[in-house]
Image (cartoon, rainbow, N blue to C red; front, side, top):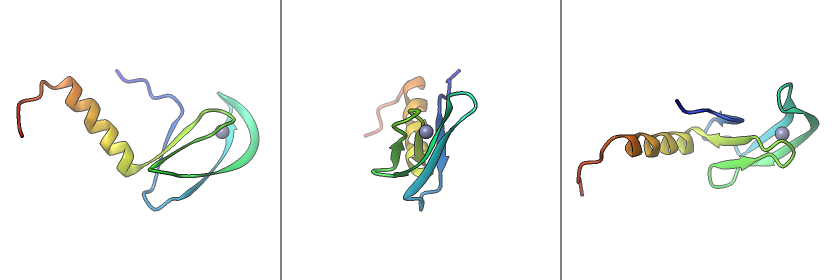
Length: 73
Ligand SMILES: [Zn+2]
């Protein structure tokens, strides 16, 4: 089972996200983060924001890892 820690998936069109922490990891002042290359990390709480596209890619990478990849070049 994959433990998802502090990861938030946002729309592909999002370029800016805001974060103010949460109950679990602690609240902090509201900050705005710019999504770069499909992801952004909050420097206060370490929360990761990824676009759907990036997230999908990430998931398929994991899936491939678990599946024994057949040679398909
Ligand atoms: Zn944060």
